[in-house]
Length: 387
Image 1 (cartoon, rainbow, N blue to C red):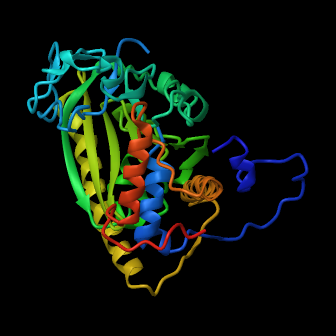
Image 2 (image 1 turned 30 degrees about the vertical axis):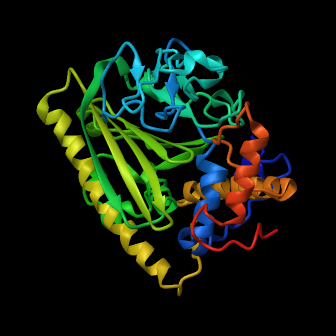
């Protein structure tokens, strides 16, 4: 994803563009990109394996001995040492191996057996972003692709102070649809007047527009005086590939859509409340957004069912009202194509998040090749890479 993406897909401007032209609808991604198991597996490698500092450190929850979870409790907690309850291996908060019972008498390099660290970045508003890329330097640097996502001028103009918000509650919805359907849906409000009768009271839809950035999309509209007074005008930002944040004076909603299969996804929501807001101020907007999210789930479920039937190929999207979904789809196409070319050049599957062994590498590679030859990596027969 480069800054030229905007121009490549005709969303930028050019000095030669002096004659206004009548716009035409733009073809969307084909239905196969929303139903194909092969495309889903490829996206896992091309998109989710590499996309996304003070003293915060993040690690994979995997013991380096036999892959048992080091932390079994979900949610939150604290500890001074990270100890695996399977064989007793333990790690410091810096991820370094502190103890491996019985290994002190072996020729064993403790330095090479610490927890797998994950790249992370704390933005200016206190949110922690992680990047699963196993490389020492991530292929997708935060600053290049999410520049200014945390210092948007509209936050300051609206008097948003992120220190005033605290987590109120979380919830999840499971949908039977491809993750990209939800991204398409979130990134336009063309459907809002038809399906969300609540929204016009909160958003001035006549002025709704989207600013297309490298790595993220900023949605905005000019609020009415009543909306400003009530504090319900919302600033929404979508960050590629699968998260969004909607901010208002009284609440923040963080949405993450997590792909489970080609046709199944989980939506995870974190709802934050302004500590200075009243119950009625908070619930007015928080309850409305939850109603909208539940209706969107129904819409996405129904659209996926028709895609699965194999009749529909793709539609023509509106170049203005659906420019953000088009930009999202073109970004997906760009990233997938780039990774496709890389795998074709290297003649192998490339998993950027996969760790490389530094000891007994030859033995490991032989074992991997045997496994691939036995087709034990997925249960389906492979005919080799289809280049």
